[in-house]
Length: 134
Image 1 (cartoon, helix red, strand yellow):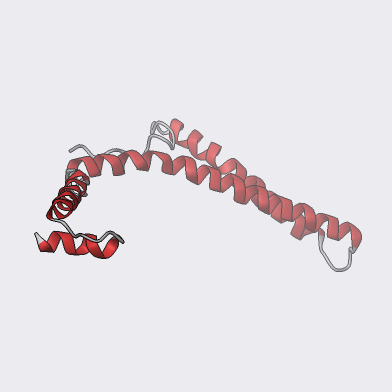
Image 2: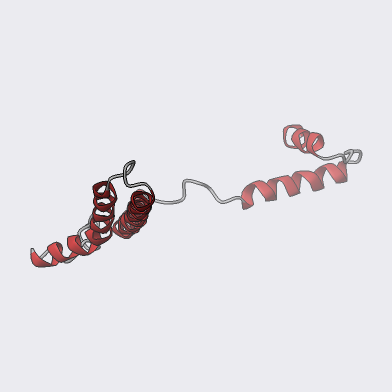
C-alpha cells in the first residue's frame, strides 16, 4: 500500500497523516488508474478498416494539390508576362507562356484523370482505391 501512496504524496502538497486519508488517497488513485481506457483495446481488423477508410480521401487531397500548384504556376506565368511587357529584353515571352500552359495542365489534370478512368471502366479516380477485405 505504501507503493501506491508514495507517488501521490510527491505529486500533491497534502500530508498523509491519518490512516483514513491514506486509504482515501489509495482508493482515489486506484479509481483513477482503472478509469483510464487501455490503449490496446482495438483489434487489428478495426485498425485495418480505419486505415482503409482513411485512404478514401487520398485522391481528393491529390486533386486539391494539383489545383493549388497549378494556380501558383499559372500566376507565376502571368507575372513573367508582365515582366516581359515591362522589360522585353530581360524576360522572354515564351517563359511566361510555358509557365501558364503548365499551370493550366496541372489544373486540368484531375478532370482528365477522372475522364480516363471512366472511359476505361475504372469508375473514376475516387473509386480506384480498393478497401481490403478482412
